[in-house]
Length: 465
Image 1 (cartoon, rainbow, N blue to C red):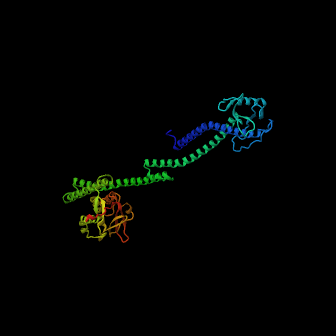
Image 2: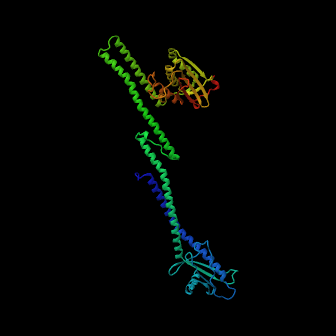
Image 3: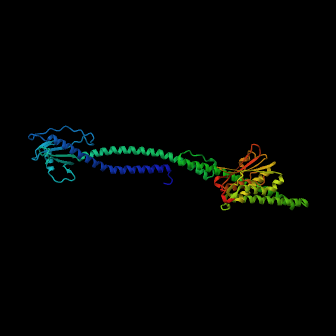
């Protein structure tokens, strides 16, 4: 059963359910239909018997009564069924009968029996439904008359079977129609699921670029859209991972090659005296560079994955920027750059890890000092959407092909170092519930924007001073 497709299992289940409902309906309706027909027949017999007796009571001595006109009972299920009738006086004088004389006398004898099995009399060849009506004791009748009416049960059963077959045909046609409609609806529901399963198999085998969006509506459409977006994210992540390992290999191979070359030169006596000393200094510098790359890689990994390393607290934005400038001031003085502060006069507060956010700002400002010509500008602003911290330089700006990849690992410009500084800044800002972006200014130079939404505000209270 597990190997059967879902659409076939659903259709089979609905078919069994439908067949069960039809079977139970047939079992319940068949006897109910028989009882209903008998009750309706008894009512019909009583009605016709009463009307016949009204015509049959004479004001003169007894005389044969003609058959009454047939009565129209358009609402009766059995309006054209034949009813056997006998009307007789107390002295067994037959007033009216549509039966042969011998059979009429048997009905008269039958009426005198005090007990009948639920109004059913067993005849020679059939069973009969029997109803007896008497005018004895009625003030409206001039003469006592008894009417005995009977209908063969075989005729009721024949009518029961005919109606039952018609009803079953109707139910069968309705069931077939319902099954076909359910098959169509099930196909429309299951087909997107089957297509979605195929797309998930592509995700399972890491063929993310081959995943296509499954067209569907409702909850299935939402799931299909999520799977498609997930495949896009995983494809981007996989591509980034490949690029990361390529970049790591390149970044580590270069200093290691340099160290190996200088070491072998010293070993083979190629570098001696001052040249050997310079080679040893180059080896030390390359080792420092390697250590920095490895340290930053470890830090970036922790920032992106580990929990509990961020200690969120109230952070004053202006004070944080001042401390950033103070920490980076030797580099600013060396480059002969100017720093300009502008923005909100009132103190702004956010909820972040102060030390790590300071590290992110230092990385960004250090990057700006490499490319700025004269000035680095800081600006803060606050609105209903959040707080923005802008860091801009007046350099050449960021190349268009580098801009979309700027915050990825080992992506660096012509004067870059390890290519991990901005990636670390991005990880810190995002873990502090912020966003970081970069763009080129119309007047020239690069602009970095750190945006912290309103939810990260730390409202200033009256006792903050």
